[in-house]
Every structure is written in structure tokens, then in C-alpha cells.
Image 1 (cartoon, rainbow, N blue to C red):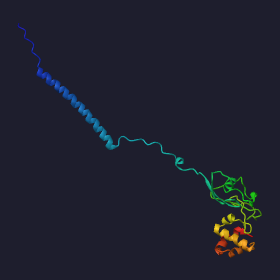
Image 2 (image 1 turned 90 degrees about the vertical axis):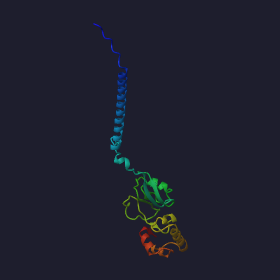
Image 3 (image 1 turned 120 degrees about the vertical axis):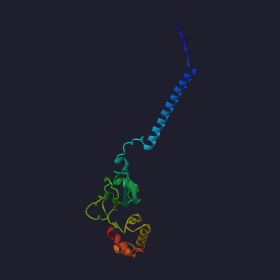
Image 4 (image 1 turned 90 degrees about the horizontal axis):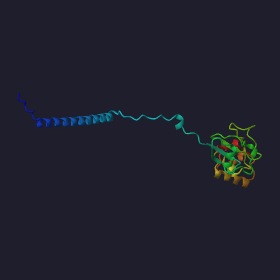
Length: 206
């Protein structure tokens, strides 16, 4: 029995199968790449990737704290006016900001140790001024009537409707005519009428 010789491998068929395998790999890579791009586009359009917001600030973090109080210092001080103090400031601090006591100030007329409140008026009386009532007013400050015959220009300037120019006129009238004998004598000062007198009548004396 004669043996048949082995058939030579089909080189053309082997090459075709190899090309087919390479092509399949390329197709798979392209498909995976396309799927990756598609997922990214889907997330971008749907907002799938979101940033988780942090905790919102507490209410106390956004409400500013009070940083100071404003008081009006008037009466027998060197520089009457509006001053800002830190929260917890005292009358002594306010008087110091106003230049300290004037020479004719009644230093016992105010409680220097008292804590001030926002928006209050601190009136330092002059020596010998009659108190308006038996004690301190609602804000704890001793009120006093201003003596027209001893008041300085700065003290007169603290009265309602009286500015620096009017205070100078009152002093000029007093220098030219002598002491005020009545509060109504203010009507003789140029520029003072019934309305201004009514505004300051209860704050002054002679």
C-alpha cells in the first residue's frame, strides 16, 4: 500500500485568516472607543457628574456682629458731639473722647462707671445747675437745665435748633445787655423766634 504524500499547507488561506483576526481586533478596539465616547457625551448632556455642595453656612456666620455704639456727649465738656465707643464702653470713656470735663463741669453729676447704650445722650451738667427732677432720667444720665448766664458757646450749641452761629449771638447779647433776667429775653436775640424759644424753653434757666 503506497503512502500518500502530505498536502502542503494552503498559504493563501492562512493569510486570509490572519487578516480576518487583525481586522476583528481593530473593530473591537474601535467599538470600545466609541462606547467610551458615547458614555462621556451622555454624562455631559444629562449632568450625571455633579458636584456635591458643601454644608450651607449657619445663620450666625452671615449676620454681622455689632461692633460699636454711638453716643451724644453734651454739656460741660471740651468737645461736645457724637462719638463711637466699643460695645461695653462706659460714660468715662465717652467723656474722655469729648476732651474731658470743662472747667465748670459738675463731675459728680454723671455716673462715670455706667455702661453706655447705643443712641443715648450723655449730658454733663455745669456746677450749680438745677437738676430737672429728683434723679437720673430713663437713660441713667443726670439731666440739668443750662444756665443762660453762665453757659459757654459749646454748651449752647448742644441745644435743639441752636448752632454755633446762634450760640455766638446769645453770648454777644449777654455781653452787650448783661444777665438774662428771664428765658423770654432770648426773643431779643437776633434770629430767635417763638418756635426756637419753644424748642429750648424747658432746657434752659436764668
